[in-house]
Every structure is written in structure tokens, then in C-alpha cells.
Image (cartoon, rainbow, N blue to C red):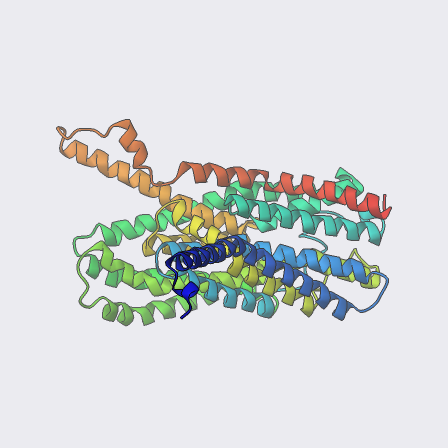
Length: 496
């Protein structure tokens, strides 16, 4: 060892340098971590553009399709970040699934739903929101769809950033409407359809909330408030799981398997009844075995709802992938068709490569950005346990069936979050009712101060108001953004 190496002063200097390096590494890691998600997302968007270049070939409109594919990939990432949380949030909030498990299940089932059952022939642009013939030329139509796709993606991205679960369907609808008005005036919009969509802003969450609250009331009265909770659970949990199985069988028959086979509502209900009855019979011995040795308390009941809740989350993800992938790739498919053939007035078939962009984009978006909204839906609006989360999942399936029967366009986001609100507000009402009942039984018991009663509220009002505000302005905000983007694109291209 040299004299310099043994010098204490030199060793102190070396330690300080090492500490600085260590701090630098920590700082670089801290700064770089938030950039990992956007970086991977950018790579995926670029790959989507390269895929479009490869499959579309070298034509006059190839660059337009490449740009549109990048916009579609960006939209799919945002759907994964925002929309998928509605299916997984309740299960994660109830601790039936870990965050990693939820993301893995959702990614698999979202992709399977999109690739197996998604992408049936979508009507000419976003469910008849505008009349394509009013656009005049294929070029104007393509610019309008580009503007709609980018505007919807930007709006969903903003909503995810502020922590508001919004309807990606409504975002696309607003984008298409805004671009249509900018391109061809107010007469281009199908206003009766828009009126029905506006009505669904109210109908979806209210119906989802009421159904979820009703099932929670049933569980509380028939199981939780019974003297022998385990005996009550042995009787009612198979019935509830059978109802869930029947509801999901009907839901998937109606909404998730459209590409494979067309099934009308009576047939779907019959399929649901058969499946529900079969699962009820199977679950009777299963629940009896699961409940052996459980203590007679509420915590024991959570075990019995865990597996049904995980299965319901997976099925919701499959159905969501089958239906909502069109939000990402429907306008992109329309641009591809118009660019290839010049035909933009007929129904649009979605090419396989376009479906793959949508399916993988949703999965990447969920993996990279989904946890924020999953936590919001699962635990920050109101506290969920497996019984409450079960009610939310079941209400989502039943509400879609009722809406299909009534012919109402509904949002899966609004239904699921409405179910969470319904469960929370029912718990508030039930808690107040029980306090009043106890006060009548014991008149000398002191009443709670107003401040304490406010603290006892089980739904966080700040989140409630933020989400409702985001829902109300989604269509007009996406429409205004889309109209501005259309004017910008069209003025640059010389289309107007």
C-alpha cells in the first residue's frame, strides 16, 4: 500500500466521491423512472407505424395510413391506461387480486377478447354518429377520422393524468362528432343517436349503481346480518355465484361473441339460465367444503367471494377487449379502407394487423399506466371488500343486458364506476339507518357531531365530483378538440 492510499484524508475524499456517485445514480434512477413508460409507449407507436408501412405497401396514401396507425396505437395505449381499470379496480381494491396479477389477467383476456371476438364489421364510423356522404370527398373524410382519433386519445390521456375514469366510447363519439361538424356542418351529425348517447350519461351510472346497491342489500340482509353467517352463506353464495355465471354467460353471448356467432337476446338469456343453473348446482358442494372450519364473522365470508370475483374480472376484460378495441381501431380501419379504395360510405372491415395494434396497445397501456386508475376505482372512491366488489362486477354484466334489451347505448366505464358509487352510497345510507335505529333503542345515547358525521361519509366527495365533471364534458371537450385539429390538418393539407 502506498502512502497516499493509506492517507486518511485521501480515504475521506474517496468516500465522498463514492457517495456522490451513489447519489447521482439514485437521482438518475428517480428521474428516469417516470420516463420508462412514455419511452416504451413511443417505441410501440413507432412499431405500429412501421407495421402499417409493411402491410399497407408503397402507395400514394401510405404515409397517411402510417400516421393514422400511430394515432390508433396511441389511442389503444390510453384505453388500456384508463378503461381497463373499471374491470380490475374492484378486484384489486377488495384484495382478491394483487396489482401484478390483475394486470397479467387483464392483459391476457383483453388481448384474447380483441383478437378472438373483436373486430366484427363496424358500421360506417362510430355507430352512425355522422353521415359519411356529407363529407364530400375521401380526403376530407380521412382528415376528419384522423382528427377524431387524435382528439379522443388526447382527451383520454388528459383524463388519466388527472385520475378520472372516462368513457373511451364517448371520447371517440365526441371526436367524430366534432370533426364531422367542422367538415360538413351540424347537418352531418345524427342528432337522435347523439341524444341517446347523452341520455346514457345518466342512465348508465344510475342503473349500475342501483343494481349494485340492491345486491349489496341482499347480501347484508341474507348473510351478513344473520346470526349464523356461515350457514346463510352456504345457502346464498351458490345462488349469487349462479346469478353471476348466468349474467356473464348472457353478457358474453350478446356482446363478446358477435364476431363468432350472432345471438339474439332471448337465446342469450336461455344460455345464461342454463349456465347459471349448472354453476349453482356445482357451487353448492364447493361452498360447503370451503366454509368448513370458518369462524362465524364477516371476515370469513370474504374467502367465499374471492374466486368468483377473479373470474368475473377476467370475463369483464374479455368482453371489454371484444367491444372497445373498435374505439381504438375503428377510425383507423376506416382510414385504411378509404385510402385503399376511396370508398368511405359503406361498412368498414377491420384488417387483422389493425386489430393486433389495438389489442397489444391496450395491454401495453394497462401494464405501463393502468395502476393509477386501478387504485382510484378500487380503493380511493370508497373502500371495497370482496362482497362489495362482487356487487359491482355483477351490476356491470346485468346493466349491459338490460341496456341491450331496451336498445340503449351505455358506457361500460360509467356502469362500473356507477356501481362503485352505488355500493358506497348504500353503505352510507345503511350506516345512518342503523345509527338512527340504535338511537331509538337507546334515547340517552349522544348524537354524533356534524364534523364526525362528515368524516363517516364512505364516498369521497372530491373524487365523486371530479369524475362526474369529467363524464359531463367528455363529448363536448373531445368534439371541440377534434374540430380544432381538423381545421389545423385541413388547412395545412389544403383540403379546405
